[in-house]
Amino acid sequence: MKDLRQCFLLPADEIYLNAGTFSALPRAVYEEQIALMASAESNPTRQATARARLPLWGMQQQIARYLGADAEEIIFHQNVTQALNQALFCLPWRAGGEFIASDQEYGAITNAAREMCRRNGLSFREFPLPLQPQNSDELLATVLNALTPETVGVLLSHITSKTGLVLPIDRIGTELRKRNVRFIVDGAHGPGLLPLQLSATDVDVYAGNLHKWFMGSKGTGFLRVARRLHDVMEPHIVGWGGTPRDATPIHDQFPGNAYRFQYVFRMQGLKDVSSFLALGAVLRFRESLGEAWILERISELGRYARRRLEIDLGLKCFSPIPELNAGLLAFEAPPTWRESNATERMYRDYKITVPFWVDRQHGSMLRISPHIWNVEEDVDRLLAALQGG
Image (tube, rainbow, N blue to C red; front, side, top):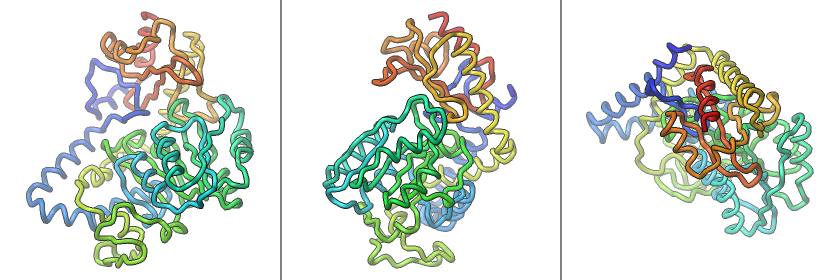
């Protein structure tokens, strides 16, 4: 396991236990992206134009296969916040309806949903999710009980960013579809942490980050929109793709693809696509290790961390039972680590990166999210630092 750390650019004297914010980038992916950026500068005009067409479309197809989705349903974005803003503000909503979200959603996405409601004349309401659910049936029942006859949309995380709670989005999507309620999923932590088959679900909108557990470059993510909504989304940025009413697909850019959705929401001006084209190096890296091994190793490290901090150190764990948890583990911060600069002090004194913060529900918290570059000794050193105060 120690040799695997050499595949990353992490300093030998530091411990990085924060994949839930940003993943460390595999060295092979970094080198691929740098090479792509350098190559692009050999002729910026020709390269910028060419790469945004067939090469990017080819990468989109590869990522779609990994996600269990159709390439025509996916648009690359820099992050989930950007992607879900596009979906929320470009979809039509019935004025007077109600849009709901759980109280465990990521703050930026909650802000976007609330503002979308204000602009469209909808009411916005948060409902509580159980903090320590015993099974997925409890989560499903909680969501369905939160619905009213006026509910037109629901926003939920696939995996919550605070505690790593995994929601049964496939089962929830099926029930919301029966009720004609749109289902928006914040999948920031899904790709690379859970097996995904997005096209097999009744989720209307799913946005995911590729710079967390998937191990892609910073600023790589995607938006997946169910095909039934493609013709009703209205772009807020109108470029060469036009709008759903006047877009004319250019077939030599996307062979065999006549869906206007791609042209409307992709053809919106120049951007450097090197980070997205380098995702092929991520797929190769993951394949060399084995997808199943990666997921099991993350789980193994999580189980070890939970045992050491919850049982051996006696910290209260806010994350749910292991069957409903993935990747992220949240604990009550020890008394000596509850000041506002705890995150910086942990790095300054121990060269360990983990976030501390004060939460309205749980109080002072720390969160750890280990990945395959970590070893059990990293968790041991964190425990010793927490004991040292």
